[in-house]
Amino acid sequence: MSYILLIFSVLLGVTVVFIIKPSNKFVRLLLAFSGAYLLSVTILHLLPEVYINGNDFKRIGIFILIGIILQSVLESFSKGAEHGHVHIHTSNKKFPFLIFTSLCIHAFSEGLPIHNIGDNLLWAIIIHKIPIAIVLTTFLLQTNYSKKNIFTFLIVFALMSPLGIFIGDEITFFKIYSSEITAIIIGVFLHISTIILFESSENHKFNLQKFAAIILGILLTISTL
Image 1 (cartoon, one colour):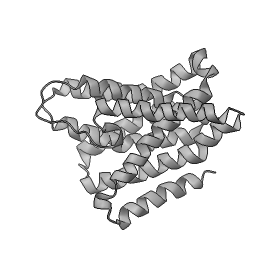
Image 2 (cartoon, helix red, strand yellow):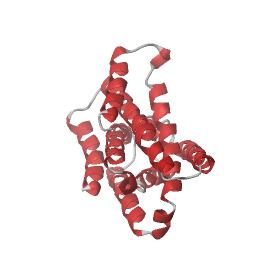
Image 3 (cartoon, one colour):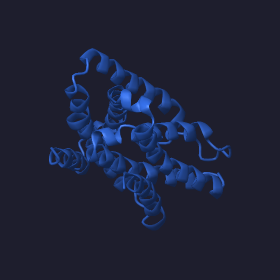
């Protein structure tokens, strides 16, 4: 079921682009909501999970920092696609393999700790993927890339998180070091979610709709405690 939901979240984002053609304002609100939900799940569920098992605080902290650094490196190649912004020229005819690879690594890593944490992390990733799929699809359709490359990109991207779940369940290494891997993912999520929330405020002006979306994301997470 987890596999299906993760694939469906990407397909839903793609479908929304073709059928609804959402406005930038709607996508920004959805990003703000997903960023708040992802950050709340990270703080309220993932952090307690890695510390409650008697892990060394400093050691786990180091792996969280590694996750932040890892995401910073991936973002230098993905051009910010993980948090809803793709900063490259749409006139470029060369397929962006660096963006493709970094997004796949990011999506794969998200899936690794899902079965160790449970439904809260699963839904956080699902909610995160929908606006990202919308932004990514919208961007790709504005480029000169072939339709075959675009749909291959999106299909492989949709499959990467389910692949992460499968590898995390089947490979002993990922079971032994589940706390460390979860700590790395915490760092990745902290980096992404905070950037989404910072970028959701244009010119640092108060926006009631975005503020409401952020509060809704936080309250939804608190309701699962």
